Amino acid sequence: MEWTDEAIARLRTLWAEGLSTSEIGRRLNISKNAVVGKAHRLSLSPRPSPIRRVAGESPLPRPVAPRRVLGATLPPLSTAMAGPMPSLRPLMPAPKYSHRATPCCWPIGEPGKPSFHFCNETAATGKPYCEEHAALAYVRVRDRREDVA
Ligand SMILES: [Zn+2]
Image (cartoon, rainbow, N blue to C red; front, side):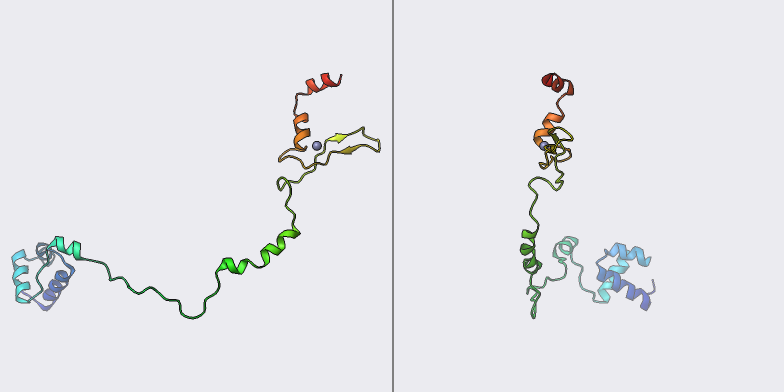
């Protein structure tokens, strides 16, 4: 085995990467003993045991000091939004029921007469009538007829 500068450089690199001596030997196509011997002659730092390597190989040291925000910062979004929102609310009275404020179209009175009108209560969601008239509307028609008769 001729230790060219390139081979020595690779040995140093692989050694620094923590590869095992046998693995380094495989990559350099030399024996493990040659790796150990050359590393010794190069005074490379002793290999830590694999267990210590894993346990002691901590990631980059954490920054201990917390990050400080320098200078003025913008107020939190919630504070910024708190201004105009409440003043807008009184302008939009909340519907008593749902957003579907459909008036009940249940006819009251006789069509064609001045007293005739629709119920106009707020209809239940998804129905054309208010709760009360929806209950009447969806009763079986035959029963209602019998009641009227
Ligand atoms: Zn109604």
